[in-house]
Length: 128
Image 1: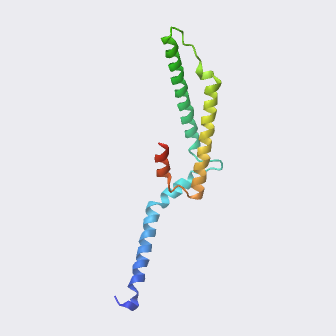
Image 2: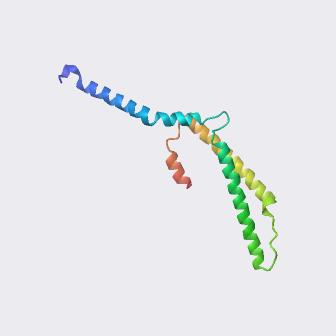
Image 3: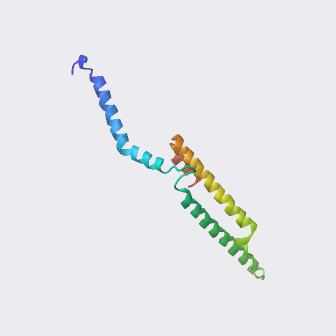
């Protein structure tokens, strides 16, 4: 190629076209999917997240109740604690559901602002 044909400019243009094609094939579909998850109040994941929170809190309450009953049984007492209906259990459930809603609002905001770039680091640091 001759200098007047500007081979550097042509190479750079080819590189930009290849990068744009790669982006459109690999990343644009994922971004479009994520953008489609946004609703007026949060994301489409909120319902499933709330169900998981309720289920996990129910399991935790059952576990605590079993522990208390076993502890009382070791002392010869009948374990009849009803943790499932206690204000502590209800408060924990309400707190868990509120936290789930806040995390969904954070997820929505991250999707809207495009700040999900460090999501893998955040997931590793929180142990999730």
